[in-house]
Amino acid sequence: MLNKEQTLQIILDHRVSAIMRSNSRASAHAAMRAAQAGGFRLLEFTLTTPDAFGLIAEFSADADLTIGAGTVLTIEDAQQAVEAGAKFLVSPIADPEIIAEAQRLGAVMIPGCVTPNEMVMAQRAGADLIKYFPASGNVAEYVRSIMGPLPTLRIFPTSGATPENFIHILNAGAVGVGFVRSLFTDDDMKNENYAAIEKRAAKIIEDLNNWRGNH
Image 1 (cartoon, helix red, strand yellow):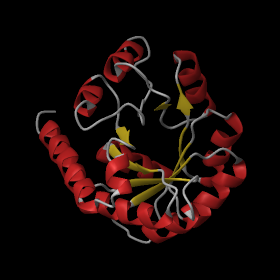
Image 2 (cartoon, helix red, strand yellow; image 1 turned 180 degrees about the horizontal axis):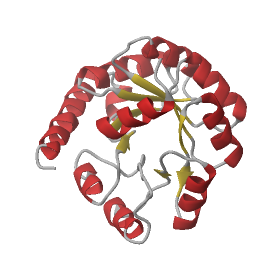
Image 3 (tube, rainbow, N blue to C red; image 1 turned 45 degrees about the vertical axis):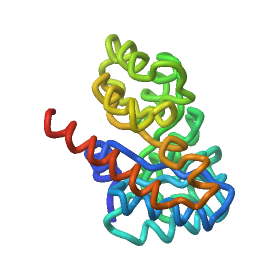
């Protein structure tokens, strides 16, 4: 069993996560398997996805994967997600009670924040990483501007990251990025084009590995 520090280190080492939000369990399952085949090892299922807890349980049975739960909005969400096998919890909001519960459960907590004040308050409340959400405009420049005066923040944007710009975001100081619709495009999900998702995932991992070679 991973402890929280080990989970956090895995996230910091892998740097990229695949985030699934779907209204179909079957497509969520198939698309996430495609991302896994493309090389992703950090996989997040949002709790708005049908049978999210079941998907978390199934995928977390694979020791090569680190599974998280997204859209965690209540203490009960956090508890059920960890019970199902989630090692990290992601929320669009920064709720001190959920952050505290994640600490109690031994899960990595990644709350959503926009402003520097929100980010620092979440960090002080015990957040392990900061999900820059919702992101808009030039994500890399925003991260760079915050990291200047606040270099201890560990920012992990999960919106606004694309296969084309994520290296710029890492160069700006983000510890990692999450891919949602830029990996699981609406067209590919609608057309069940999981081969395209796998190919896109593999290209992201290839670009990441090339970046690692220069850092």
